[in-house]
Image (cartoon, rainbow, N blue to C red; front, side):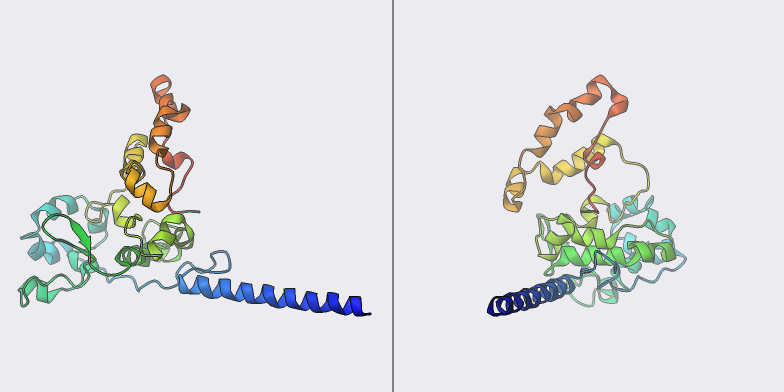
Length: 248
């Protein structure tokens, strides 16, 4: 009888521990903006999508008078064709337009030029950029917006997404891979994809900081998949042939 009682107590303890662990996991997932149910809620913690209006060229003309380098990029941007103006993503930004304050920035500005390089302005700015893009592109919203869809829950649980949530400034946000002012829907060529991935994964110091394999690009180019195009160009592969940047 005593032996069975000890087993019963042990069973109760293990059940309580398991329940506590599951609650902690769920709480941790909620704090990260993830679903603890295998990604059932891809829209969690996303802002409302921006308001889209017609007449984007006219609405952006005042901005382009100064930002001529962006005007060239934005001319063929997929967002422009979808009724996006500068204010759609950056806000009305009257203080910036009227220069009522010295160096007043647009209302939604995640980074700025310090004279030498672009620097992120706010804590977790890179994660906020991803959330803002997902306000239109998260799968369930994309259909309503007529936008290209991404699996937001999968991205949030991906290594890139998790690193962004931790505030890692090395981790790529949407605009590191997809041009903010020159987004295109044309298919990428394998070599373009490899070069893009190499901009981070070929940086040994960055990979060392991240605890990621430092020679992955070099090993790829020297291996069978990297050398295959020399023999059979039609069999060209890229990083995306095996890895997906938006998924686990």
